[in-house]
Image (tube, rainbow, N blue to C red; front, side):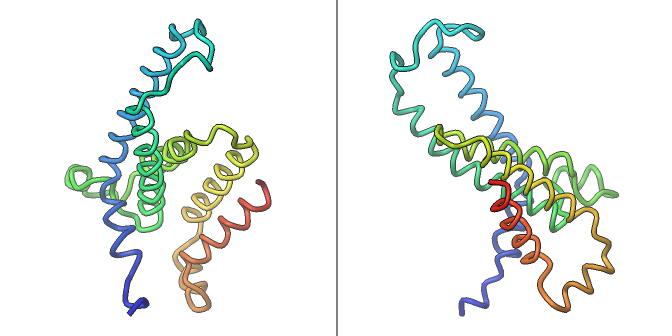
Length: 176
């Protein structure tokens, strides 16, 4: 029964089709973060209040947890757009019937999804962030650069999507 569940069709494809929605959510979340950071510092450019003098509100905590979840879904949406060649929304598909996907939207979803996902973790070493971004970039380049004939040859031995996940994990482990 567990093997009857298709992650790609049931989870990744619907998330990939909601890319525009997640992009909107990420924008709203980061605008609210900017407003709260301005309020916390007392100014947009200069720090007038020390970090330990600022009280974190329940709203900001809830927004951070919500941003953590939206970051995960945004990463999945961007990866789904790249792998499945799905447009970011149905409106985009209707307006641009000749194109299958929007690479820029997918990459923006992945990058801002990573930033939003990692926002609550203040003690994260910069090497982990760089490793995550480099691994995502390399997997995106491999996804775009491999010709379909080679994908068919690889599919004889292993599912190409699983191979991309393995490459991502190996590169992330080496760099981070």
